[in-house]
Amino acid sequence: MSVMTFDKMVAQMTPAMYDSFKQAIALRKWPDGRRLTQEQTELCLEAVMKYEIAHGVPEHERVGHLDRVSCGSGDDPGEPDAITWMN
Image 1 (cartoon, rainbow, N blue to C red):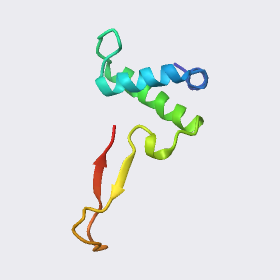
Image 2 (cartoon, helix red, strand yellow):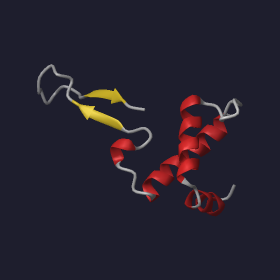
Image 3 (tube, one colour):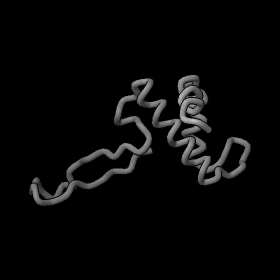
């Protein structure tokens, strides 16, 4: 698929398509139960990320967002922050 065609497809995505792609990525399968191939997963993920940017989805709601919070053991600047996985 050419970049121009892919970008056009993303520009025409509906919120329902966006939700369907997000669910397919999370479950690694299509709504009918067929498993996504690696290439399909990558394309869906790219489409979802482009959709989120184009439609102003808040950063904390985007796919792959990592909420950076302190681990609670103190505010030592030398310690790395903990990572909280969010779906």
